[in-house]
Image (cartoon, rainbow, N blue to C red):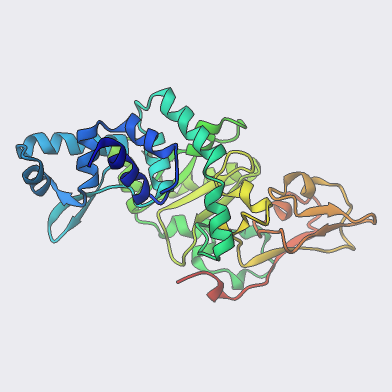
Length: 331
């Protein structure tokens, strides 16, 4: 296989077969020999050393470097340590951006990819009705009946139930630089936390600091999000409406499917609303508007159920009401 085909095959494996940019990202990160090793994964240091005719110590050093750059991930199976490549474009994006020695040219190319090619992915997910990548976690304080809340849709309880926690920079804000909101804001959980700490791209935190980060995120108008599945995943992101690879696409019907809303929707008590407009300013998807009367209106087709509007409302005129059953969140 020639080098062009090699980098194209790696690009296809992260789900971007038709990309003209992702092959160049691979070229910036991996030499041709390193790319062939990544393409041969999964494997152990011993099996890969045999495949490429290298001493195990030399192969292990190469794998350690590829791990450091974010293109090799380790795991243990049957007592043996294996290495695999990124599973998809988002993992490739996040891991390589946090490579401490990543050249600026690589970060600039990620910006180009995000602006020019990435939008086709949310569009495909939406058009094909594929499972959403992310799920909104509602602001717990905004939910009308706390008895409805599941443990894995309460950000604070997710932190309390995690075995280990770490925090990393938000890769989206780090490269896009469209706002100056909280940067050290991605809370890694369990295996995600262990990976960030081992790799040196994140620092260990306790539950109290995690809750403080959530508090700061809400105050900054950031949306809590996690993987779109039940249970505790590997991360709680705190996302903005300008840099994120999720929230901005929720504003457009053609790309909205990339994000699953929470099970809740903002509900306005018209009798209490003073139409101050704070909820309109903070809504990350422009779902709230003035209705020409004395209260605001929520567009149910746009609302993602984050609860930021309720969190900001000075007269408690907005709350979150349940509109979907527990089965709405994929098992």
